[in-house]
Length: 122
Image (cartoon, rainbow, N blue to C red; front, side, top):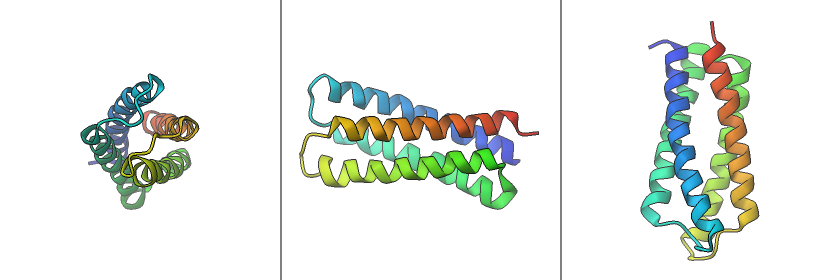
């Protein structure tokens, strides 16, 4: 599989992750303190799959600079997701809306950068 196909597949997985993230954010904004555990775990699993594939594509085949910028932001977003899960969700504390928004903004920016790199790679 070539690097462009791997990056496109990673973008699709991460877009699915974003859809689940929007669903969970909507739950939080309507007053629910945390999403269901199964949804949070599925969100993290699919995000981890997409991020792992993007990292593999970059390391094994050499990804363009824009892809690496996107991957870096996605790693930062993943760390924010770990904080949301371990610090708040597992302790049954309400997820801070500011942290949810920051997590989403960083992840969305990383996804856009990765998508641009994947679809403009020659």
